[in-house]
Length: 312
Image (spheres, rainbow, N blue to C red):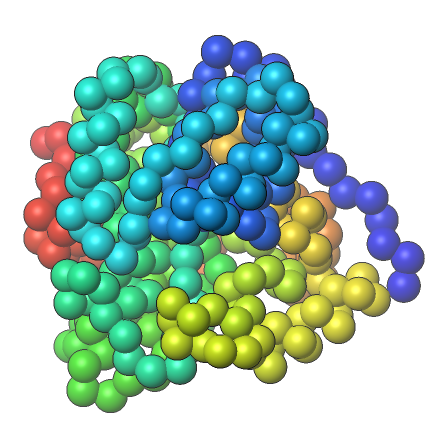
């Protein structure tokens, strides 16, 4: 099947500062490269310095005049998140775009973060909540747009309120879905609270559809020594044009983050059949993402667990 060329028009971002998590490879790297090409100054927080340096070289190869710097950040540690926020706070520059893109998916066994949270819940959701909170003064100074990346896994499932850490009976896929549903609910509540409190930032959400990214690749840090079967299946579908590629899958987040037409509180994803591929556009939030009461509950428990509070 012939693949249609897909793209997003990116405005001139000269003078803007963007922080992108998960930009050392895959979709995140393509996203960061596009932002750099539009003139944004990039701050890339990375856990693996070697991968970060390789990503930086790739960006500069494409855009020799790009202004890109690396910072240390391990999203599996709230202390690391706090240290990253403090370092940027000391630099004092307003942030104009925060793209919460990083994530882990389906570790084969129940793993925990440095703080004792189930790895996906702690990394995909709680760490990004804490990151946004620690950066809030800089985001407000830049009247930033915060874009939070979800997953098609958030189409179904819910929050396991009786066992948020999945300590009693671990289901890695349901735990992954929980982390993304919670993150989507929280990001929408961020928009509501910012609008009500005149915080000066906006928040929206995006998802990439399906693409052969490194989420399901061999990743020793999550206990996976070889590619997950799902990665092979998605790769085969991508090759015949039925799902996206890493280059096209990042387009909804790019559009949500920087397009003048992207709106606060809205949800952006691929517009092809099943929303698994195709060009980016607005779509209705999936049923698990629609409850305001659930969003408030997620907000409150997230503040409690991270010990990070937001403006009143």
